Length: 413
Image (cartoon, rainbow, N blue to C red):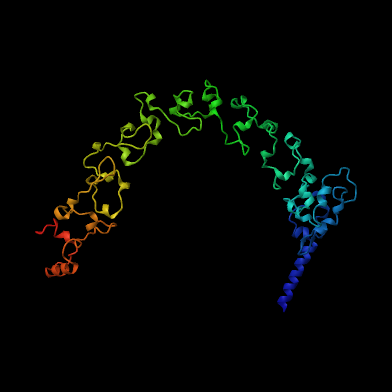
């Protein structure tokens, strides 16, 4: 019982201290200048265990007097949009927008405003509150509909605009006067920006190079686009020698225009592969490659040392199927140096196909997924049971592997 009494007494003391000295125990920060006189009286705005209440605000700031009189009842010299704005808000909704304890210099302690809480009349007429923010430019002079047609309630920008609503004779420069670049390219362009630009954004833009005078150099407009590498340092001002007007890439280059002593690596230094195959190759890429592209490429296998195995270079190209798993490293047994296909296979190295054995592959190899498997039972008069009994009499257990003993397939084997 004593413990309960002590706990109750402790909480009573804490609550009493909070009520007596709230500015010392709970004050989250200084109030704005207009509320400084009630800084030590928390109950002016707050209620115990309920926080700040809007009805406490309206005890001083009467909704019907906002924008007309101050809290002392004195008439304001200038009435502003606060009048119509606050009248369109729900009663006792002050704390939904306003806060405090932000310091003495905080003159407009306003949170992010939620437009969902205002009346329908205000929501349909943005100018009721934002009349002082209406731009005076030519673009907005013709705007008669709600600001929400272009702007959102989060911020004025970015804004969207439906250009289809403009009259057919409207000139882009009527609204975008300050957006016209001052470079040489645009100096000769007309006022119809839509020749190159779309209404969704300035970029990407298209340009009809056919309208450019034939004597005009590419660099007159693309001065800042010229690469500073070695390849372009000797190139002339006529970019169209290699590039097209639809884009810089892909580009074509006439290698015949190069001096006879030019080395491929002088320009293609960063294109040299670092693999084992190219490590021993010289600087003359044209030995294997052509000027139209890196691939297809040709390779003279005669230059390879005779002891070098195919998989030293073609390591990643070795098939992983069962047919190749028993093949050696000398791919040239079946394949040529021109290409992997077509390939040849010498069946006589494994089993001679002569006389009666000249049959289709499927006659013996009836499992297409594994050509190592074969059967002789399909042609020979022996049945599996007869062969089994005859071979067991001779002590032969591995009688399924016919080729182990009958290597040539002749009767004498």
